[in-house]
Every structure is written in C-alpha cells, then in structure tokens.
Image (cartoon, rainbow, N blue to C red; front, side, top):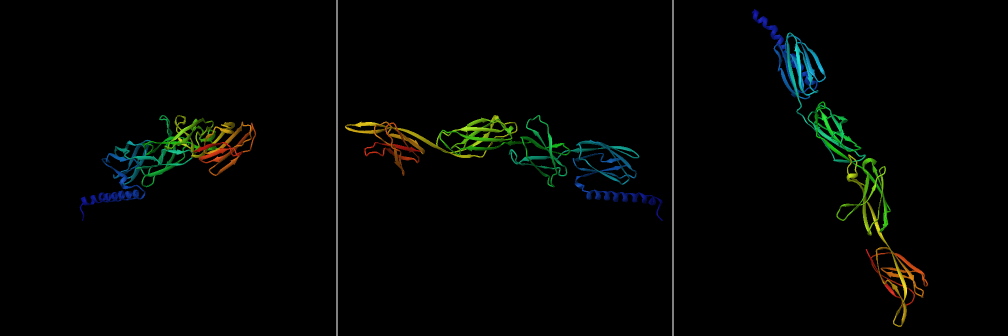
Length: 408
C-alpha cells in the first residue's frame, strides 16, 4: 500500500504533467497560427513573478505570456494605445504582437499576489528606397522600389515638395514580398522627395529626389529655307508652369548644342525665329533650361528637327559699250562673279546702244535670256552646282564673256 507522502505527491505530479502538455499544445497552436517560434519570446507567470521579468524583443515579434501557476492571473499591459487587460487561467496563454510603439512596455499581473514586468521593444531593422531614374518625363510613369527587413509590416510611400520645410504626405501603402522587396509605380507632375516608412511609421528610408522633365513639342517651318531668311519654331511646353523661357538650339560639329534664339513662354507656348547664316544641313531643337525652370523641373529638350538652308543669289550685271583700238563692241561689268551653290539669278541691264541678252552655260546648263534693247533687262535663273560657268550674250560672234564661280 503506498505511503501517505506518495499519495500526496500524485495530484501535484498530475498537475505538472497537465501543465507541460497544455503549454506544448498552446505553443503548437501559435506555430500553426503563423507565429514563428524564432520570433516568439515566452514570459512565464509563476508564484514568484514573471520569468523573465524584463524581456527584450525586436519590433514585430511576439511575446507569449503563459500562466504556469495554479491560480489565474490578470495581465494589464500598457502600450501606445492604452492599457490592455487579459485574464489567463492556470495553464492559459496569451500571445501579443509588439507592432506598435518601440520602447519600454510595462505590465502588471494580479492574482494571489501582484507582480510587475517589462517588455522592451527595439527597432533593429532597416528600409531602403531607390528610383529607376533621377528624373521622369512629364506624363510618364516611373517606379520606386525598395527593401525592408520587416517583411510582414506594410510600407507607406510618402512624398514632399523639394523644399526642405515641406511636409510629408502619403502616396500609397504597399505590402512587401516574402523577401522584403516592394515597388510602386508613380506619375509625378512636379519634382518631389520620396521616402518609405514602416514599423508603425517609426522607421524611415533614405530620401529619393525625383525631378520632372517638361514635355516639349516643336514644329519648325519651313524645313527648307533660304540663307538669311528666318524660320519659325513653334514650341509647346507641358506643363505650362514648368518654365518661363524657351531656347532654340543648334547642334554643332563638336556634338554640343548652342543657343541661337530665345523667347518668352506665354501659357506654355513660344515662337522662336532664326535665320541660318550659311547653306547646308542643320539640326535644331527646343529646350528649357537654367534659371527659367520652375521649382521641381529639370532641363528638357524636344526631338531634333533637320532643316536645309540654301543660298539664293541674285547677281547684277551691266552691258556697256567698249572700244578696243579700232574695234567697237561691248563689255560686261563685272566680268567675274561668285555665288554659292543653289538658286542663282543673273540680271543684266543693257546700257549699250545695241541689243543684248544674258546667257549661261557650263556643267550641263545652257540658258538664254530674252534679247533687250538699250535700257532693258534680261535675266536667267537656275539651281547651280559648284563649278565654273560662263556667262555671255548670244548675239554676235564678238560677244564679250564673263566667268561665274559657284562654290559650296
């Protein structure tokens, strides 16, 4: 027959076994509910107080309060929202996720005795933010992306104007992937600063600055222009508040763009006028830049437009009487002409008493103007390539001749 001491130990032994089973069952249930054991700290209530009485956890971790005593306890836990109370029966547990304010969270347990304890919540994680570019074309999308170590906490993207004194406002809240990565597509209308915050807005990322490039459309007319004749570039800037002036720039042989005209913007529209100084091919574009830009906007340029500048030469001649020894005739003044390749017009005024005309030949060109008497005007016109040409009067074998040199 068992001794009375052994009989007294059986109920206590049974309670211990049941308590171990209950604690194991609760731990298993917490694991199934999604609380990783690696992120869970257990605080046990005993007849001598909580063990440990001071626990330190990372933000977002779980503290499992377990009553290992034989009497119930009431837990009163203070956090940033107030005081939370939970009654834990013998063997009962309560899991608390500390995803509020970081710092010290004091609590008391009341039963046959009253004890106090503390849970210290620390922020040891990090959150980062990057942009795919430092500027974006007005009306276009760009992506902000980042990474956070708090993979179960939402991340809020905030924006503020570029001025340091500007206040932050929420853009959107995103949920990180399992690896902590997140992204957000935005379409800014003006330059902004961006940051990502998480951990109940207690952890902030680095600041990303993003400027907006105004969208510029330009129409250049005409595409083919005569040297020294002005063309017009009509530019539209979006948004209209992006700049106060527009610049017409020319691509140079060194690969740079030089300003050749400037105009004020009126409700986002400017007309820029420019005349080429030489014949040839040109590449032009419209830009906004420098001090004329509004806050938050970056320098921008339109697509380039190719134009052709052609020379248009009008050369005046006179036919005058000339006497060489005993032979009478006429002569051209001047006898030597020079023009650029392109449209060339020869205009002859007949000052001789005999009728004359102006004629031109060379490089496959043969032209004859009308015959005019004294005081009349004869002319020929053609598009000429570089080379040497002869001008003359087609009347009489003794006609004087002159030379026209056409250069590029």
